[in-house]
Structures are given as C-alpha cells and as structure tokens.
Image (cartoon, rainbow, N blue to C red; front, side):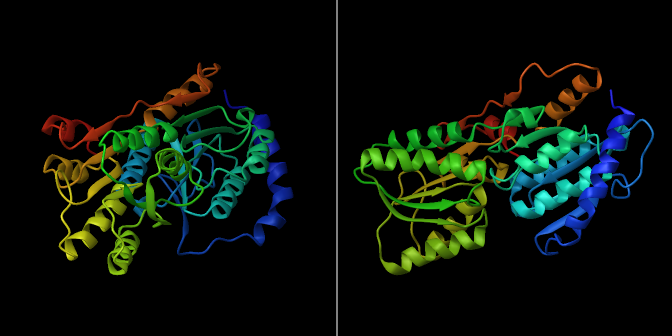
Length: 338
C-alpha cells in the first residue's frame, strides 16, 4: 500500500532538487508533458493511484502511436488512476521529466527510455522517495534493484529472428542497405547487433548503415542517395516499418522492383497492419513483430504491489514472431496487425 511517509520523503527530495531543475528545460519541439485525465498530476486525487508515464514521441511510428493509446486507455480515472504523460526522444529531457514526476510525488514512474544509459541517479532518487519504477518497451543499463519490473520485448531475439531469416534466403550475394532506428535505443541495439554479427560471420556487404531515426522521409533520402551513387544492393533491412515504407518510396520512384521474387528484399519491424498487408501482397518480404500492448502487464504489476505483494518475475518478456510474405495469411494480418 502507498504510505504517507513516501509523500514526506518526496516533498523533502523535491525541495533539494528544485534549484537543479530550473536550468534543465527541454526544447518545445522534442519534449512535451501532459496530464491524462488530470491537470498535469500536480494535486492528489484521493484513492487514485498517481502515475507518471515517460514515453517516446507518439508520432515516432505506428508502433508508438498504438503503445501510447494503449497506455492512455488503461491509466484512466475510470480505472482508478491519475496519470500524467511526458514525451521525448532525448534521454536528458526524459530524465528531467522523471525528476519532475518525483517532485510531484507520483506513486509509480513508468518508463520507456530513449537511451539505455544514464538512468541510475534519477531512479535512485525515485527509490529514495518511495516511488515504484516499472520499465516498459525498452530496457536500460542499470541495476534491477532500481526498478520493480520490466515489461519488454526481446529486441536481441527480434534481430536474431530477422537476420537468420535473411540468411535462410541463401542469396548468391548480400548487398544490404541498413536503416537504423534512434541510436542507443534498445530496439536499435538489438536489431543492429544481430545483423552486424551475421554480416561479419558470412561476409555480407553492408552498402550503407545509417540512422533514419524511425522516420520514413529520412529513410527515403538515404536509399535515394544510394540509388544515385550507382552502388548495387539487393536487401533493405529497416529497423521499423516506417523506414521500410520510406525506402520503398525511393525504390518505386526509381522503378526498382521489390518483394517476393523481385530485385530487392524489403524487411521491416513492428507489424503495422498496413505493413503486413504489403507482405500479403508480396510487395515486402519480412516483418518482425514488436508488441506495443504493455499496459495490461503494467496494471497487473501495480495491482500486485498495491496488494502488498512482489511481482513473480522482475523481467516479463512478451512473445513475438516474424512473418514471411510467402506464408503470411489474412488471419495473421487481422490478428497481429497494429
């Protein structure tokens, strides 16, 4: 159960942090904070559980939009929560938001970190204030003693599944355009690491390896630059669906065929419904699942803690799979598309 002592500690901690926070504002273009069904989480709401949710920009991708919607539907007043949300793709801005939530005396801090590093100090502050921390979607490089639970995808396994699928295509040569997500994120590290390992092991040629930061337009520009250079390539390995979509736009503009039995293999991640429909039409070749629906898992952990218990598992890994254009069905699209 939540204790009055936590409120006292949080108030004292807030006083010591105030001076430091004055100089730490984030840019308006890349970070925002908003209340869920509250006025920003600055006042108590009786028996409601007060949560501060730090996430990446909902406009980052279809995956993130679905993830944010799932969280907002769960952490509502109707479900007994008072929720405030903060968004940024920058780690320092997320850390500032976490400090603000600690100052406000939330009961739970829910975190999808922009970067895996740099979280030890602020999570120790949360712990000292009696605030429970639950990670979702992304892991961090910190002691698991600093958080109560981590509900995540196995990003390394996602990458391994995709890279092994690519190896199994037994191409006569591999010339790969590798479009990376936001550098340092768990998704980027897992999906990049697996491809790097197999490319080195099998002598594959990485034509270019650049971050498009999950963005379709940036991905299109990168692929267009390769096309303009005249370098040959036969694989697009994009670390999310939006970047794969941007890559395909560049291919279409240059009249380069793609998909099953065509000139270029197209690979994406996240399983947006529109992306799986591209597989079904055999315009793309592979899509790796990344499950955005973590809110129910988080709610279960909170209910356990509120009941005086401890989560049975510190790390909860959601099951995921990869889809091949040659075997995907309409039922798969309907069931797994987000």
